[in-house]
Length: 151
DNA sequence: GAGTTTGAAACT
DNA sequence: CAGTTTCAAACTC
Ligand SMILES: [Zn+2]
Ligand SMILES: [Zn+2]
Ligand SMILES: [Zn+2]
Ligand SMILES: [Zn+2]
Ligand SMILES: [Zn+2]
Ligand SMILES: [Zn+2]
Image (cartoon, rainbow, N blue to C red; front, top):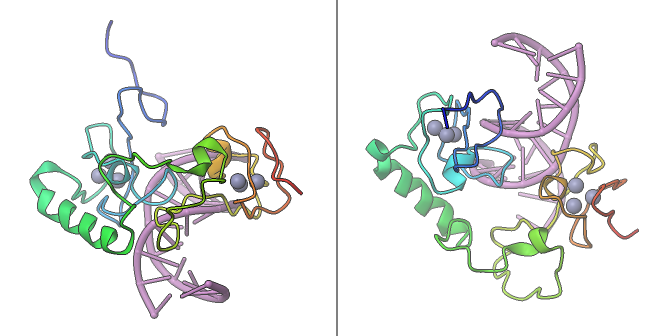
């Protein structure tokens, strides 16, 4: 087993996320889209990351924790260490539970809101997760290959 | 690799 | 809560 060349931009199977953040210092959330995936995953940036002025590192854990606290203050579910909850609908495509979701579904992730991609590309969180869209989605013209939203 | 498109996080 | 801004990833070339 030699080191594999990482030509792909997707995360490695080992958990490396390989972000490329520039303005957020890797201290903002992301599910996978938007902002830093490393920070959202609760891990520090690693070698393969191409981020600039990264603060998501052990040396700056003070900043990391501060950023986490700030986000948690608004979203208690945002960064719980152990995502024991049903992580949502989006991964299971079922919303009957529908309880919890305290403030405003907090970590939200309840469904996509695609307008132009028609849920046919990874811009759509549902498609990225390989699940069909559900009633929780507000997509328009849904064409999710894993299942269209009812309607 | 540079440039465009996209939708969610963050902000107001 | 809704509208706008900001942002990095997905995508295209
Ligand atoms: Zn980052
Ligand atoms: Zn990173
Ligand atoms: Zn980083
Ligand atoms: Zn979608
Ligand atoms: Zn969806
Ligand atoms: Zn959809």
